[in-house]
Image (cartoon, rainbow, N blue to C red; front, side):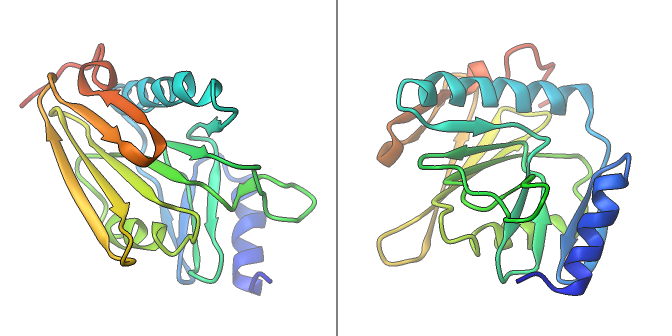
Length: 186
């Protein structure tokens, strides 16, 4: 059940020309994406889609709003992978995803202060097993994965030769493909 504040946020968000995150009753404008950000998001979503298609999984892009039930979060990852049936908020719009398995976020520069809390809230979504964070101007990617004890394991991947692997999903994301066409600064 959504709070009145969450319902108000959704009503305003659906009319707004720009996207905003909602976190614990506060609304934060999302920074405008750079061309590099858009390309990284698209490259990564395409890589995921190529591998997901053969398994019957679904990849959704950056226009997808995700809700962490009970965690006070509505946000827009750059890509979301769903390994089962896609579940959406049961309202008349059905435009909010509830069950991503893997989330991708390209980190803007500078990074807004509330993003750290957003990333932590990603793991409040029970179905989220992995979060991929992509640095915008350097070939650096991190993968946060839930472990068997309920904790979080974080791995870093650096350089265009590296390949981010998600073993339990049998996914391989070469950084050279994630960063294809992106001018790196570091």
